[in-house]
Length: 328
Image 1 (cartoon, rainbow, N blue to C red):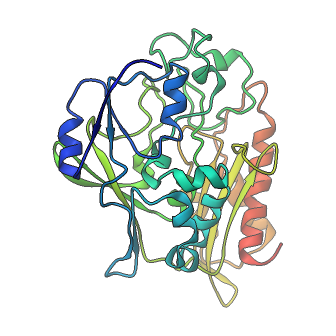
Image 2 (tube, rainbow, N blue to C red):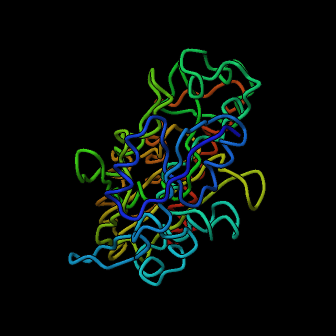
């Protein structure tokens, strides 16, 4: 691990000011960042401890939504009554991630920022990784790419976003609140993570020095019909090959609203509003779900070892909605 300076921030304003230092990084739970530092993948010169900032509350918003502070541990968020009752999709996604020990330590803000689990990114013995060393190439494209993206990838990177929580937040149309050198701003969840393009080293649309302070969930009609489906190689402590966050507002057998986001298939949670729209105004049945699944995977480009993901993702979409709607 590289040498670094350590600073503990006592306020959001102080944290943002300290982040002006060259090669500075925020740290809270450290469940991802420390692994990256130990492996020499990330080498910050300054670590700014934000774990004790007053950002660990879950509160009800005046419009009926809920605000989750960035320092709330994943386990606390998953088990909070407001989240369990109003946003079961988020609770399920959080509980599908990592292990109980990690969920007790990892924070909401840190979960949003976790890096890809691409083996070529994590192993510095592999020279070609544009995400780790911009301009060096992408070893995964012609290498072993079973876990990699089939949507939204580029010739520079085919890595996937590993977060379960982010998939649920995308489906629930959450907003990420940040504070930075330019003040406070709100970023819609669908705009928070970015596709790789020619700059895969940039995972998010955050400006340098910006600190996540909270996630806002809008008032939702998805509390009764929601399901997070995670398909993985083993039952626990494994990242998704494909995951689906599916939720419905059903009244008298008709779909009034639908939410859909995919994980394990792209550089960011993959949401296709057109696929959601195909379900609205119709009764929930298998033919409608299959059409929505086809629409959600439109434009997919599998690679040599992950062609199975295309069919798997379509089946997972149908299954997740069927469970959510009670027709499984």
